[in-house]
Length: 288
Picture: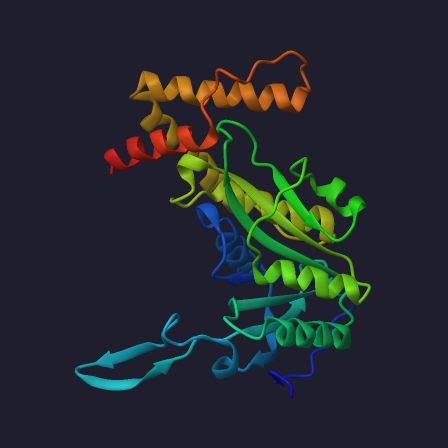
């Protein structure tokens, strides 16, 4: 049984599907701000909606009640949508937005792939952001979760192996790979100590990833301006503490040594990313 309802017969030429669902890791609101930027730049139309009663735990994501002068004027229910439109250059794109499903992931991913096949989707790109032991004084880099090594290399990746809990974007990557459609998750690395505040540099990096990997025409100019202001604010906060300036310097040295592949760099004297995060988060909370 289908979990979706078609709303419009939209024609887009070989679109890129952008997946930006709520409910999983989004440090610094990177993915949320990137999605908002895309929505502001591109006019989209609802192609299909998904059955919220079948997919969403309404007690976990409660509908919003509107009350005017004591009168119940109705509910706004959380909704998963597939939208489609064209960028500034006329290239097709689709957006999968709304809350991450709580249940029936296999059926949901199968239906998303089915709808995407009908639209002629040529690539899936997921958006996310995660806390990392990186300094705010260096450019925000992306890390990939991809369906092949070439895509991973184009984006950049965290070396080595790791097992982590998965979000729906990872399940969609697998489903699209099985359908023969390339898929990659774009993950912005956000400084641990800025993960709980808006961090526009992460959103800007994600938009630029959509441009580079997806071949879309989108602008990150506004996000870059906001990122400069945020960097200045963080600089002011950290400048008040010699200890925290030293911590950021250590992070800079670690990142620079890693990127330059300098041999003989001794990382044993550096605090762990978690230790640095805990210290700076306490400091920033103390500053309000």
